[in-house]
Each structure stands twice: as structure tokens, then as C-alpha cells.
Image 1 (tube, rainbow, N blue to C red):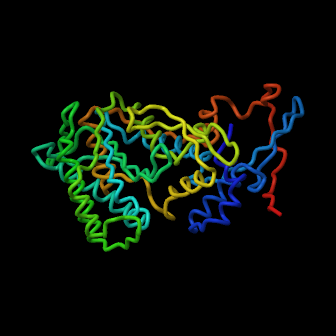
Image 2 (image 1 turned 120 degrees about the vertical axis):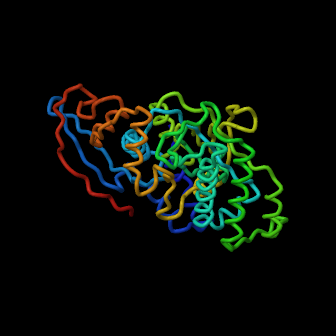
Image 3 (image 1 turned 60 degrees about the vertical axis):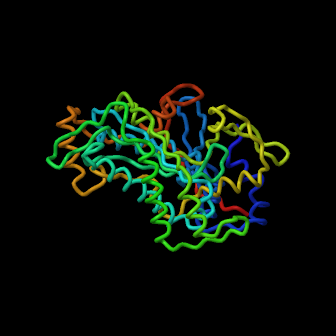
Length: 373
């Protein structure tokens, strides 16, 4: 199966001659290229029953690597199970107009933070209003910067409990199939984001854009912004699995890449503008790498954030109160080793020899990193 790493290996050197990478892009590029190869070293295991030797190379653990997110995702999911309540959960997606893409890409750190702030303030202010809920809510926000075709498409996914705590500390349920009016949500988000963007006094350079910065802001004020709210999940377990699909996702997974031929990459994608039809796209390898690297986040940027009673300093006391009033069973956190998580992902024991099935596997040596010539 072709992988992102293969594309980097085959076309990366030529790409680097033509394009200048930022420090964080260069670091991610190098990590993905070396992941699970001799460049990072590894270890050898031998089966005492049949004598076969199996070499395992180390992972790069870069958060943008398609190979390294499965384990991180499982570890994160295990940590979140204790925070779930016995209520319905809403999935809300906030998207900015494509006209702002250039501004956001040129000022990623500032604009991504503005996006998080606009979303969180919109939800918390509306839900605190007695007209809608009149309670303090709790939700998790996750930043994505890509569309299915790898284009730049910044948006935030929020997973929010269907209710909250009022001023007296009592749980208030939201309506089962309705959270907030979409137009109210969308317009408040638009107003918040553009106000914060203007206040930030960021730089904007784009000769191909017909708008100046002030004109661009005015143009975006006149547009209807897209906010989407899905019906609530049925069970808390569904929430965990669903969250996992979004929290540690990278721009494209290896299983979507169909082939690499004649300097072109072919991959599967879903066109949401055309009734979510599954389609095939073929682009030049150079363009594929360029699109992939657009989604490397700034150094140290937190793309998963918790708000409301999930994010403040009284999180644990608030959660305890919420669990009592929503009749949520208390789940004791159980520490699961990395080995157990790996075996859960693989669906088999890594302590069993793949050749003879024996469990007499022992570590027989470490392999230091091999430096490239």
C-alpha cells in the first residue's frame, strides 16, 4: 500500500529544491520520512522456538505523521472516558468563509487562536442565556485545517454535552434534538470572529485577492457563515469513538492513497458539496506534498481544547456534581500500558511469534539509529 512516506521519499528532495519550508514543516517532513526506518533505530526480537528474528524500528511520534496517531488516539480516548456524562452529546462544526483562507494561513497562530476564542465565546454566551439553556456548558473543541481534497479549509469541531449547570449548581437538560438556532449561532460566531480579527491588527498580503483587508472584512460580514449541528449521540461510548475519529486525525491517512504513478498521486476523497459522493483525485506529487505541508500546525499549538465545566479550575468538582445529577456511573481510571494499547489496535498479541505462534519471544538486541550518508 502506498504511503505519504513513499511520496516524500520519492519526490521530497526535488520538492525541497523548489520550495522553502518553515522550521516546523521541515521538522515534520524529516520525521515522517524517517518514521519506522533504520534512521530512528529500533530493536530485535528472537523466537526461541523457531529461531526467527523480527526487527522493529522506532516511530517518529510526530503529531502530523499518519503512522503515529493511532496509539496517541487510543491513549487520549482512554483518558477521556472518565469525563463523559450520561446525557446526549451534540456535534457542532464552525467554518469560516474561503475568502479568509489567505489571511488565516499567513497568520496561523493568531488566527487559529481567534477561531477557538470566537467559537467558545459564541457557545458559552448563547447557552448561558435563559432564552436558550441558562446554564454553564462543557465541550471539547478540535481544530482541523483541511478539506477532503487536502485544500486549506480551517474549521472547528465541537462535541458538547446536552445540558449544563445553572447558577444554583443544578443540571439543566437541553432539548433532545435541538441545541440552538443555527442562524443565531452562525451570526454571533461571524460577529465574534471578525471583531477579533480586526482587533488583532494582523498583516495581509495577497496580490490575487481583489479585496483590501477592510473591504474583505466588510465582504465577510455580508455573507452567511456555515455552522452545522448534528443530532445528539445516543450513548457515551458513541461519543468516545466519534471523538477519536477527529482528535488525532492528520490531513490524509495512508489508506486513502490509491497509487503513485508517473509523478502523480491518486487518492480517494469525499465531495461534501456534491451530496458527499466518493470520488478519485489525481494530482502531481509536488502538489500533494505542498498541500500536505499546509496543514502542519505552528510549534506547540494546542489543537484540542476543553471549555466550560470541562476546562476551568473546578473541572473535577464540577464533573462530580454533573455525574451525580445525570446518574452517570463513576468510572475509575485504569492505567493501560502502551503494549496493551498496541495489541488492542492490532487485534493480536505482539508477544506471539508470527511465524510459529510460539510465545517464547525475547528481546535480543537494540539497533542504534543509522545516519544517512
